[in-house]
Image 1 (cartoon, one colour):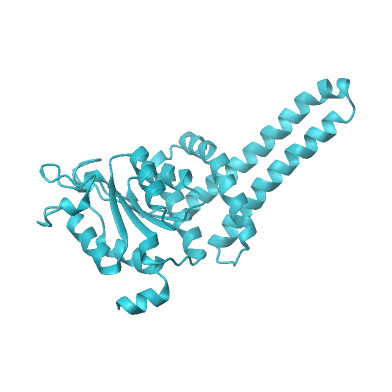
Image 2: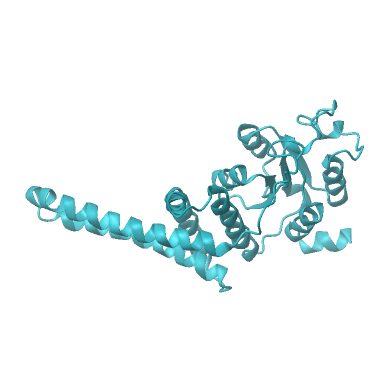
Length: 261
């Protein structure tokens, strides 16, 4: 059965993040009110100090969420918003998933929306890197399952027979001079990134792996491309190779792009 992936909508993630912020604010206020009498018995200053600290945390999260929304709306935001924006995502994302579940919104839909928002934020920064500082990272399920030439440790083992798209990724790697690696999981993916130390990553994976990977490697800029699963998850997956090549072109510095064209 072919798995059809609906076009992700950024507004879903933004709505859930805003709902999470409101719920976090109410919960924080409730915590402060409950702890007020006990703290006041110890010192009259303690409730005020706790209130200020909690307000600062909530304000930082609010600034981050505001920065995300302004960027999505097309406003040019300062780099000052980047730290609070990603901190807000890290803190509120689990709550957003739970709120979505309460409204019967599938976790994968929320993750797809998050990936779309993340990609938009990266594109808005207009990041350009040299080709040898860009890494294309894809899971091993892109390789034909029955293939005897394993490419996990050395993608050069690929015979480019056309049965899968590993050969097409190799062609992109050679054409643009970028790195390409195949990973069996998150641990190996992080090891590859630590070894190659790229300045940017083009990651191909499913919703869960992309979502966790993007958050794990922050502040390293990552563009996420969802794979296609005509045979179900983790088996002979496919990719939109034109979209991958376009993402590579967007990342490469203009001077390098002119040289290659």
